[in-house]
Image (cartoon, rainbow, N blue to C red; front, side, top):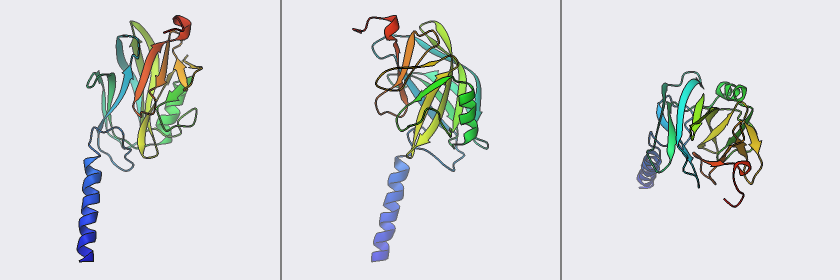
Length: 197
């Protein structure tokens, strides 16, 4: 009887775990998997109605992990970038990220200036309201959840409540959205507009 109860409980725990870990779920970190996932990172123009676009130039990914390329779209309310890739952290993509960024910030669950391990990183051009900026984006993990890093060459740290980065011309600030793991706000910087905004 006790053995049957344990078997049922074990099966229930496995079923619950599998139900919460779909292949498109970018919230859960995978450690020894070589499955290609849809890894979405979202950008919200916050109070500004800013048109966005992205074009990829290059990438780095942990050895042995699948790579399916990058696309953009608006699957939810926010515009996003979908990196089709496996999820396994290593120091290679993190070092590559740092070599392609002068400053960086990340979404929830990070407490360092730079990532030590990333699943993958991409670099390219993000176009914000018609102006293109070199950008580097990477996915890491902390406390069992995937998080995202962003920065780029010529970018700087912008002072504020959160660790924010600013585009090289000082026009836009990118900041994490509260405690989310996959969302950034993009807004014009205070130097470019009234502080009452």
